[in-house]
Length: 164
Image 1 (cartoon, rainbow, N blue to C red):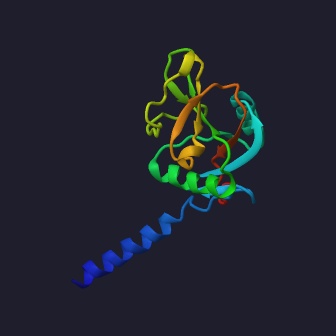
Image 2: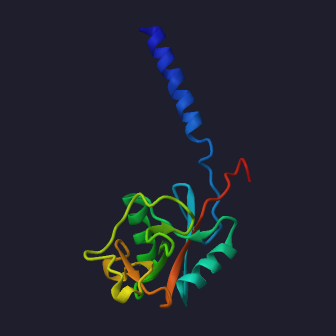
Image 3: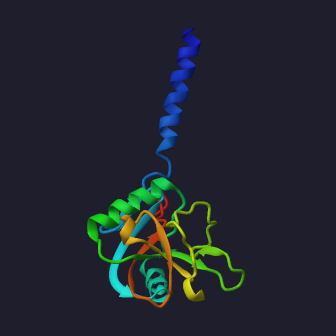
């Protein structure tokens, strides 16, 4: 029993010490830190392409935001809702002209979706970009014409403090 308790305690210490490895991420002052990424809402009303170009210029590896699970969706919904509430917000999802598949601008896989009911509908065959919908408190998505003007959400993965 004593050896089991000693071994268990040892494993617990190792687990706690490893859990901090790489977890100390640095996000710039006005960026939201969540999981392994930093996010920032920009209020300029721009097209999807302008938003993507602006995001790329902000930080190394920065893109329009990609959303991969419900936890990330809820966190970003709360973040945007506290700062904004008037317009839909561009995110990094776009319909590929090459293969007709929705793709994230950062190249990550589309593993989670949160489309509004009846979306994406590609109205008049003109809606190739996606927004976080203001009417759903930014929890659900809608496809929109890429040349419409909206604020936008950028994302990047910072280096850990140990690697910084």
